[in-house]
Length: 95
Image (tube, rainbow, N blue to C red; front, top):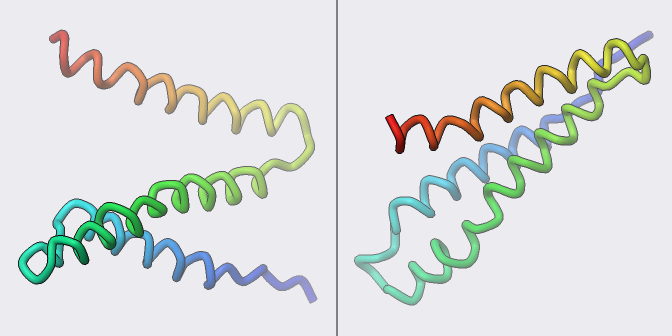
């Protein structure tokens, strides 16, 4: 029987990271304690973006098959997206 791997733990980790991103941008504890807000928003929430990069990289490299032609196509698509996102700030600034 061929069963799919279960990555529900990574889904929960990404959900927690999404909540941390929101907390980073909102400062939820600012009215209660500036120090507690600093600990949450300034220290703890800084792990959210690396978690997204690591999980995305994990799923991308799992997708690679070892076939050079298919892998080249996947890498080309990622490269085109990266080029677009690297040019986007310049288009917004210098238009």
